[in-house]
Length: 196
Image (cartoon, rainbow, N blue to C red; front, side):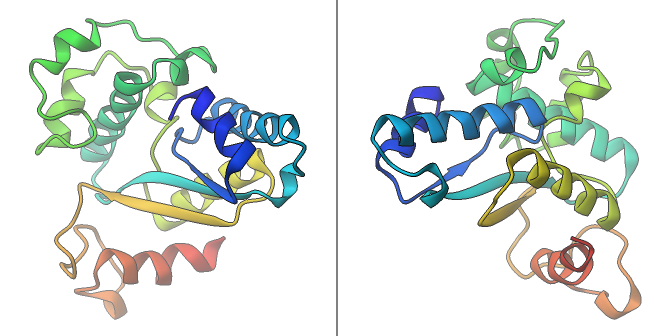
């Protein structure tokens, strides 16, 4: 949701899941809105549970990672341009409405995220890096640590895989021999979580 929805969650909810990417400014702004809503309602902001949702690129191929990360960034711009405005990220290409004519159903759910990411190749590296988790297990753990540090207290993290795998299917990336044939959940638990 947008800023008003996030503030409303702070007024009435026991917890809120935030899906604003991982740029520190977007994360801090979202938390500030939750806390502002809580204070407005006379609530203690620290009593509201915080969950973070991140698109997590499953590939470990550099070209696929870069294109998929751009598609994820474009998806955030598609539904909330404010997530580019808050940290001052540029959108120096065709209008998202024009680009959506070539992507179905949207940049987060296109059947070929590399292809949709290539449509927005004008997005610079900082912008592409501001929304999804990606890279090696060490990279992803470092990105998560930075996001959690930007927010302060986090109760739960949902590392949503993209593209969405078939449940139980082997993760499409290099894995240690002990994890050969492992699915995404098993890989994440074994390789990323211990690094946090």
